[in-house]
Image (tube, rainbow, N blue to C red; front, side, top):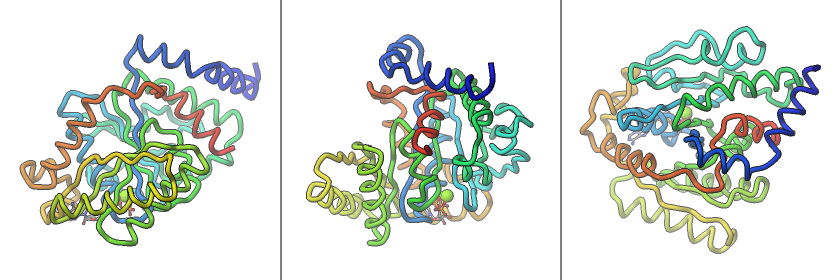
Length: 297
Ligand SMILES: Nc1ncnc2c1ncn2[C@@H]1O[C@H](COP(=O)(O)OP(=O)(O)OP(=O)(O)O)[C@@H](O)[C@H]1O
Ligand SMILES: [Mg+2]
């Protein structure tokens, strides 16, 4: 069978029904794929992904991080890892996904995107087929997959957000971060039909301040995007300990596990990790990549 035909068969088989996937997810525990995104850059996505991953791993979850930031990807920096390969090597069949992923001391597997995710639109059918089958092998090796999407509302970020089961938006109290978070939800709901988001407010001084950010975002949504639901997932205080950890290429969860930011992130990870997979979620990585490709096309 030629590769293009192979891909079509896979896509067709996989697309046969969400119903089948849901039935499968009831039989077998499939990974939850969660996007962490923001609109505005520098609001804490990478640190939230990294520290949340550590908390989830300590809860006994098998965690994979996909670094889909095509800019200056830096999840490897805070884990103090230097991955030799990235998704490009999987696309070109030089390496398997397993060979490309690096493992942190916490047992978290990290897939570096490099600039490889930037050209998803350029992939030929054979390359897509290859990626699909590689991602399929990940399905029974992970409970939770966190996708660090990078900043902005470029189409690449949108593809990944739309392909994930859940979308966590990070905002700070800065007005530009709030308007960018709103813009992200607007474009996701209009262009990809995403109707449910979770919000984490980062770098605040108090819970009250975080609730104000949530309040202004939800009232804007109530007014202009009535069918979009924004769920408050928690807040993380501004914490110099987190900054010190970053300066040392590390995670606050390791260097200061009792700090205010580490405690807050652990609480958020606790409530997130103990939630069951949403009913309408496929939780399957082939579906995930298929959804990415569908968004791309
Ligand atoms: N809770 C916090 N308290 C204090 N500083 C923080 C906190 N969270 C993040 N920061 C600071 O913000 C910087 C940017 O964080 P991070 O790299 O995680 O953001 P990002 O959203 O991933 O950025 P980018 O959009 O560039 O990928 C960190 O290096 C750190 O100095
Ligand atoms: Mg980042």
